[in-house]
Length: 249
Image (tube, one colour):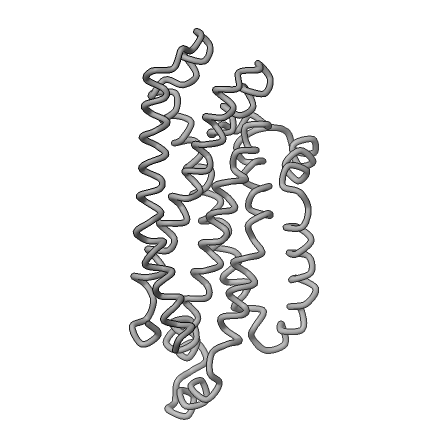
């Protein structure tokens, strides 16, 4: 009980503290942008319209990758906890671990060399990178469901599908959502590398800052990517709190 209470207090602090931190840093950056002595290139790259467009591109990449990851990793996690397919769990988890262990920039560059540059290659690379947390948490969440509840449901005449959707998945939701939140934060941060293969996003500020030796642009890109990752973390925690089954709170 003490650990649960401590975890709840930590969640509340983060839910309140993260938006405050994001707001303070963002306002500070906006004030700096308004008073900074920038040259023509820096001023053009850091206009509100340019920053908003790059942020939108970044969010689209994250959203598309998240839909693909959740739409594939959760069903695969369910499949790997059913019947004979359980035997496939170790090799598939090993393959997923290898995919995440590889540096994300290496995966992106390798796939870009094989398949070409662009948005969908970046999506494929980032999806591979973010696949493991959702898959692993889905398997862990389903395996962690109290088997006595499952047996009791079957004793009441429920089919396997009814047990899965009425008992197992609702009980596993908090663990699965933790994996989704982890994947979202990974995608928000690693999404900056998409710019290196012409897929857009806030990474363009970082790339341009490096290539053109415009350190104000480079640092601005890094700050904005970090703020976006923190915002995604905050949204993920909100979703966890409001979708957690009441009996588990």
